[in-house]
Image 1 (cartoon, rainbow, N blue to C red):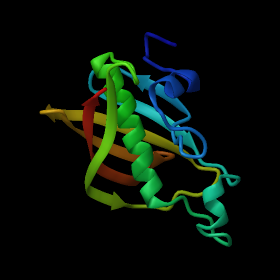
Image 2 (cartoon, rainbow, N blue to C red):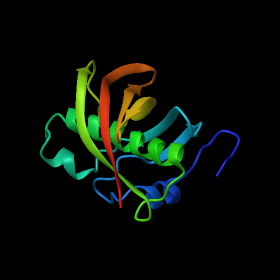
Image 3 (cartoon, helix red, strand yellow):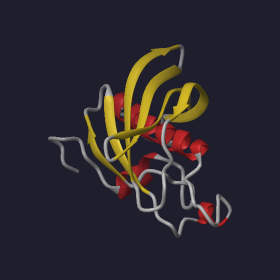
Image 4 (spheres, rainbow, N blue to C red):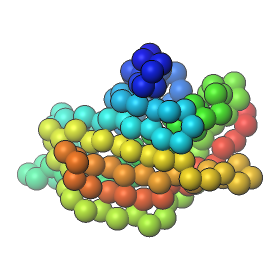
Amino acid sequence: MDTAMGAFEIKEIMRLLPHRYPFLLVDKVVSCDGQSMIHAVKNVTVNEPIFTGHFPENPIFPGVLLLEAMAQAAGLLGFKITESSPGKNDLYLFAGVDNARFKRQVLPGDTLDLKVTFEKERRGIWVFKGRAEVAGELACSADIICARRET
């Protein structure tokens, strides 16, 4: 782990998130300050199983998976903010989404930059603002709501 920038690789992501292939949608974390922001990356490849049905002749990464990728990045940030470990202290559950907007298609070969900021927490409900970008162009934005459950 690069402690100066807060970057971490797939082993740390897999330690924190319960998701596994084909539903783990974060490949690496470029930076995370451990307090208010995270920048994660998802590499979209044509051999992902979703593209056999969405859509075979014109593969487009589904909007709902853009939201899920942002929620996974928010969960990673939540673990870093609280310095907790999954299975020991906390589990972050996707509780809702507000203000979702889709601005461009995400296609195989794109690198998806997931930029999430922590906004507030109240009674175990966490609110994050997320942006999914491709080459600096906004693909999706949304407010991600997570529920923190102590295990």
